[in-house]
Amino acid sequence: MMTDRDSFRRQLMLRGLFCALLSCCFVGTSSIKCVGEHAAPSGVAKENFHVYVLLGQSNMAGRGKMTAADRQPVGGVYMLDANNEWQPAAHPLHFDKPSIAGVGLGIDFAQAMLERAPHATIGLIPCAAGGTRLDQWSRGGKLYNASLSRARLGQHVGELKGVLWHQGESDSTDKLAPMYGTRLTQFITDFRRDLDQPELPFVVGELGRFRSDAHPQTDEINRQLHALPSALPHVAVAASAGLEDQGDKTHFDAESLKTFGRRYAEAVHESTSDKRSLK
Image (cartoon, rainbow, N blue to C red; front, top):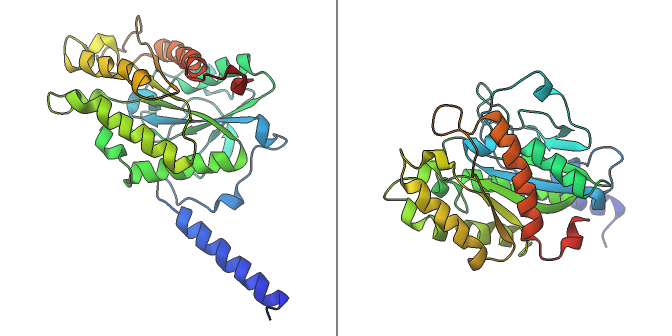
């Protein structure tokens, strides 16, 4: 017969195993803690904590020029930091390359989502890593596993409402571009399955159209991005028309990223067939 002490020891053992299974090293961060050790921001109910995961490479991470105002926290928006703790959100959100991290699209995205759901609190989970190819995000890899673990932390304390994706500059080659859409479809399918959310909204952003002259494969990748909503449910595309680079023909400038964030918010709305889920 199991005693109270035996039962307690068993609970501790099971909790330890669960923590070990979720433990995963993120690029430049410490190990993931047990999900039970994390909580939503103080006073925020789970059903009102709307969580979004930010994935991709440097244009999702944000390389826009910072101002003092950009460093000020934004009310009603939190970010999951490198130690997997919720902090008031401000630029820069990402920590993939701290020395060059800057303005991104996440803050303005969150503010636009708050306009649609003013009762909610927005949680952003930054996971992008500059310079990465799509194959580095494949299921089972370091980036995939770390992002999945962080997304599950979001599921534990809030309502996971969507994924924002911006990547493809590193795949703008004659070899990689032709199958980009097929490979991204697999990634989306895998990520949804592993989160047990088959209808989780995904918004993918066009690559900067300013890249087309120097990198003609850009147009091919953008074409394949626009084909995704026909292949998968609850996927939408955020257009980059009219957005400008910061002089390097690769990275969007700060103002363009802020505009892009609002476009992502519109696309999230489009990707959700039942608009009531955003209310």
